[in-house]
Length: 384
Image 1 (cartoon, rainbow, N blue to C red):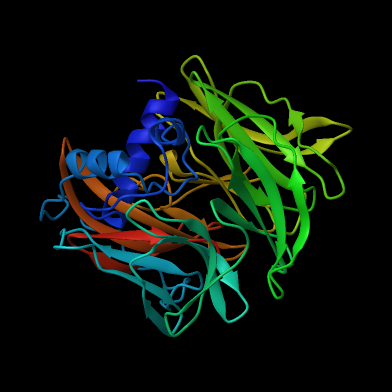
Image 2: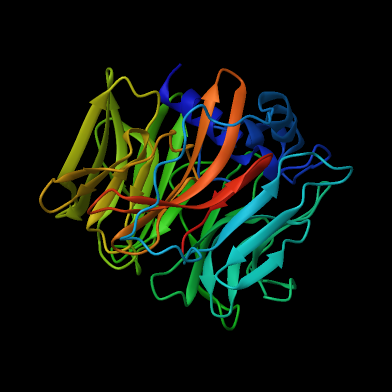
């Protein structure tokens, strides 16, 4: 199993409860196949939904190991980033999904699968009409209402660092070709539009002080690109062994990437310098099936979640997070702030899964506090 296949399997498992058994999306067959190669995507096509239903079964089972002891140095408060809890038991029409953000709780409309971050008093999301309907960026309001924004057939919305603009990929051809658009959130007016993209099925990952980062995966190979405001096209960024997993620091020009070479899997933090990706810190290990890049918003700490390690970018100091079960995979670890990370763990034996547990961990001490336990439900973390 290569990195793409492993990451695809992990993503199917992470997203299994976000798509109903009857869900159908707007993508054509060719587009669906290519989208399966990438992780930072919403999976909406009927073919994908069928695979998700077949690949994951949640079993009521308690982990053989007790959760790590609660820390007195980490406050036991509600998570300070939005997260979704999906009912893993399939209903007649769709799975129930609820957004939690501090003291606010919103039942998600049927058209919503993921949240991409806070915008004003609401949250950036993507509205997917089914069956065979439109898909476009939207702002979810606290009362559950949706305000669509930007063009039709637009997906993978990412927020600008100041949260005043969003970038989307607008699909204009059946095979996943299209253009890159930037839209003002308040007015809905195009800030920049019709920017050229280098490949079909181009994927957006995030927006930091350098610009918008995107990638393409084809034939098991991933390529990295960046668009700087004012440019007419994306420029390639060479990173040897790039696997397609990328995280950005909105407050800085730092990004974290995952790479693979032979049996070695690495997370690397760096920035674009004179047209080249300059690695400032890396941490590598052998034997991992796939690695997902996780980075704090200030760019100072990255996470090697498969080994439950927090890594200080400046010094290289590592801190072992005191978690018993593995961090679940994609959408299961995010920095709450500069010093604390939220992580969803789950024990697994073959196709049998234990309960999911949401922890808050201090990246300096490694101490973790249990915040929530869910049996038969998925916990999906989002960016702040």
